Length: 340
Ligand code: ATP
Ligand code: LTN
Image (tube, rainbow, N blue to C red; front, side):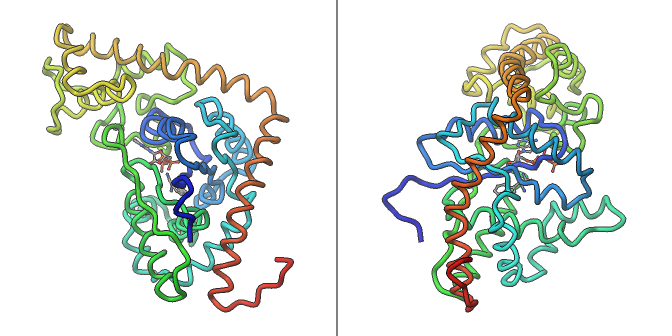
């Protein structure tokens, strides 16, 4: 079990598939950056999860490098965070297998993300169903106490808790039971084209759906200008469905300025309609995104440096995950030779 005197451990993951968007940044990445140092952070580029739906091989390699560069550009500091690629640490696949063998299939059939993704496909891959078990392995191998994610991942983290408890019940205390850490504001940024559905990577290519983190200043202005709102004029937080568009824009502004709801409403009390709101929100988004975009472009030029950082992260991750998977195997009754 974990050493109670050490810093709290944090683990989170992000898939190298699709274009990163403002929801990913506000709901997850920004918090990973802010918490570095205060806690012991592990951030994983989950390429094994990405292949639960077919990925073009060249595209996957490319996306994995791009996501590494992006996370570094957003402020993940490899001296304070272990940033690594999931497939570089074999223990994840091995741990997932062990956990598959303590997870009743009914638990997986209930997952809403699985049901939604499976409904969109003709032939569903087995990996899509066992996806949350691999996610549980990611978290449990590092004895993480906290898992900072957006709202959509809450059910998966609760499943990881159930899996840990079940393993501990069967084989004795081994796995730390993690807590989901969902932000109070920004946990669910909505699509600009449809403020009743979450902003999502899978829809990020749809025109007007998202602000991609690689968008130019003008593209950001245009996307926010086109955001769906209602026919009213009142710029206040209101969670009724017809005000979802305005609420979403105010939430984006609130997270980026770290203000209270009252302060945000006061900032817009003299605004003339939604046009003014959109202009102000666009500028705040540009201030946050533009510096990340330019650091990202620089990092993408230096492939050697990216590869070096990936190797450092993987080595540090292995030093934690390998002994854990070994402990799990021993507890389950495998003969574990010293060289493994
Ligand atoms: P997809 O929609 O294709 O499943 P995604 O946009 O959810 O992809 P992930 O890699 O699955 O992207 O998520 C990375 C992190 O971003 C997770 O912690 C997730 O909870 C968070 N996140 C994703 N979308 C949003 C959103 N709209 N608002 C807030 N957080 C989000
Ligand atoms: N399923 C998550 C990505 C993910 C993750 C993790 C998040 C994989 N492993 C471990 C937190 C902890 C997603 O789609 N956002």
